[in-house]
Image 1 (cartoon, rainbow, N blue to C red):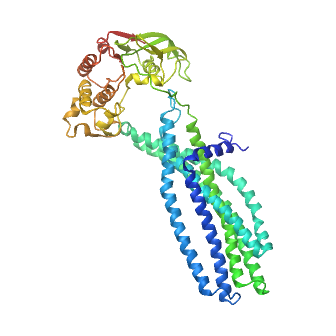
Image 2 (spheres, rainbow, N blue to C red):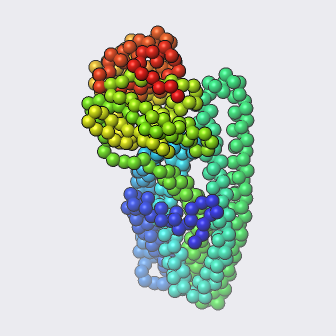
Image 3 (cartoon, one colour):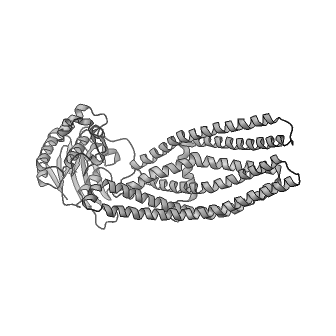
Length: 550
């Protein structure tokens, strides 16, 4: 079984293709049937052409030349109609197939387990979702049916030519072993070159995406020129890789074309000899020329399909890597509607690659209805603690539980519904303010959204010309950091959870606004709801009923 040293086996990729193609096999079957019909029409056209020439030269007297001409016209019109249908199927159903697969992979990524440190850049993931998904779907819906049509054309042309001249057909078939030998070397080399190009392309997309996201930082650091030069260096590498692949593929194609030219020359001389000795008709000579094209066209097409198949196998391998990402545990949400708290028992956690544990044998309880401040220096483990409570990561030792006075269970993705979480930084999405708030609760009413804005000290939204329908840019462009943080808090307040977890969510607020916000929250939360407030500020911690110093 062939296998790349650093990749998937060809057999495993083939099995994966069979599994993922289940949603769009119908389109593949339709395209295959259309391709076979096109081949049949091409052979019918060759026969009709031979017949018309033989009638015109007096070698055949029945049917009439008019009937042969009508047959040619009918075949041509039917061929045009079939080609139109083929383009329509490829365009309409092809987009549907690509959308289905892209949605499937995207859903898997969103449901993947959060590892604490993302191993793959988002730009690389987007590159795979766009280019690799496109290549895989085109392979299943277009390329494989086309290869089937090529196979039918090759076999049919050989049988047709063999029925007319067996020796010529066998002679032309001798180029097949040569093609197989060249292809075997060509395939494995092209696969490696294609993967290198895809990897560099992903690096370029990641660089572009990250640079645009942080263009303000790059501008203030005055490093725009350096970033552009780095892009130029990556693009230069990509050009060299593409040049290398192009030279290799062009050289291989040239060798194959020499074989094709020799085939045409042999056929022409063979036919000329037959005409000279009056052993064949002019119609047969034309049929020979057309059929040698029908034999060599599939082989030429296979040389075109080889890089496409190699690229699609590379694309499939890259998508399989995305699918290998472990998924979170799934199940029914476990909501504690009458109040909830969090309890940690002897919890330890160490990030992969770090020699020292971030948390070591920590035990603490956040009872239902408590107001707790988590304080500590940078790197002390405050954010790690919130991730444990959210079940984004699992403790190496000890347990994390969500509980109330009547029940308890281990923290898991199913208990995350109890958390009203506001992370560090600006986590707004581009769109309207209403859209961002509805991410907290899609069914929130206008009144509920306005109340959440007031509690979060974000009343400024109500004075905007378009109010809740005001547009904001990517990462909250158009808002100050403080305004964005308050909108994120309002979004969280619209949820149904009983534990409000704020991770440095007021770092951009002035002391007065932060104090007013905490006052609003403590009065807005019900006595059974829990507030957990991660902060650096001692003044904010004083408004809580208990504190945890890390």
